[in-house]
Image (cartoon, rainbow, N blue to C red; front, top):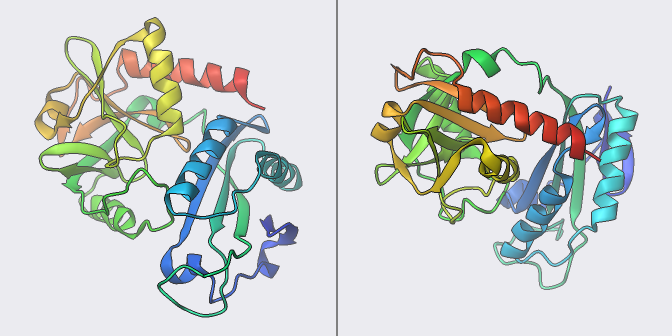
Length: 285
């Protein structure tokens, strides 16, 4: 049985309890992060903590958990659960005001902080070569997608719809332009060999893995252009890929049934995945 973290305590998962009046449960008034783990060490930890604090500030949450507190929690969870490769999820809610009210509590509440581990194969994945398929679906999320909140119902609906259509996942589209995947950032490589990636605005989550991958790409791997791209551009691309903490870099080899290239991982995607994994191993803490 897993050991989880709840408000300063490490508990068997069967014993962890959160109040029915917690605003995270009633309003999705909560933010979260997922930190990848390789060889028992944390990847891109500083970026995840910084984004958690940014998300909390956007939602006017007053009590930011300290970096050292989160680092200790993640390391202790990894140790107690013998996590070698996988992910650590941690969530912060506005807390429990003792009743339900749309207005924020008039006094600062202690936040609810939850953490748990998940085992997952991150490095050796068949999809790293065969790729994933996506379908394009409407992006009907709220207009603050850059805030990493727990209100993920629409993304979940679109992931289920993609599966129903025989695809692995979905890319979301607004005004004819691809924003991002249901839980990943989306990128294409043109036939001219240029990596196209969406601007960091409020319509997408500012990916921590995305940021690291783009920095590595600019170090001589491929030219990067920051702009939105259309669905047709994606279908006409030489390569496509997604980036996420739970996937690192994975090729997208089919979009709306259209095969890209030879239907396998392209050379630029492969290089970026290899480069990122090397970077992750060398910089993990």
